[in-house]
Image (tube, rainbow, N blue to C red; front, top):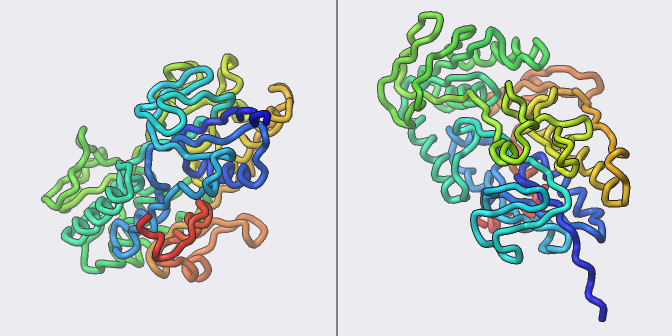
Length: 394
């Protein structure tokens, strides 16, 4: 019997939103010639969309860490998720920090998708790699926030806004302060998103300090309840007993910068990409990038990361069928910024095109349908693991 030809690898660095939509489509129409190898250090997919709530309210932490092992239904010839850290990137292979089954410490590839994402402060993302550590850390936040009487949230992106509302709703007697260096919330969205968000925060009783930048200590704030004073550049002094920082996004570009330093945007640190989502370095036309790590006009949300990943797959399909790099098609961003800010159990602001034109709606529509786990079941469905009690400890 003639042995089956060895499939070539398409390797992704990272296994979150930027490659999950791609992986779903890949599973449905996997080619005979290639397989998808997703390298991800975290043992479970982190459903970060619910972390602001789970940092305050307990009982559903296990639901937010979803195993990867059923993504390809156990068929390694279609794809597999490898749990390791990439320590070096080369033209046609990556080097890992540990031995993994089948590969050892080296995985060869024909094409690469760089989807390493970004770092943001906890609890927006958790700086741990296992489900057990993640659940414990969320419970630590719950405990500290419960103990605090005057928590201060620094930074009013989606995480900061949602966290402030969740705290004030769960503990109405706490004096919650939200600090924001800008004069409006969510500036990449419609003005009405800002207005509705401001009014809901006010309704909850959150003290809002806008248009003034906090002066932060070099090493940040400890996760503990102690008297804290935060000075602002405008001369204010904000007093509380717990400070949680929700600002700052750092792209994970160290690996790529070593082999392709010119592809890293010197001003922002993100990855420059061509319209085709190829890394902007003609020496490596087989390198693609997608998600939060790229320099792009798209808002850095899971929705846009997902769409960029699908665009990469479209071009990979051209190449796998024998097409040339000159035949690749540009990614056409929908340029429609969609978001739902979950501002407590019954309050929300959403920018959506579900009704036709792009509009912003408030709690009367958006606040009626948010499940307690903030749609975590959707993550289980994407990763092909039934959302059942018996699976929550997997």
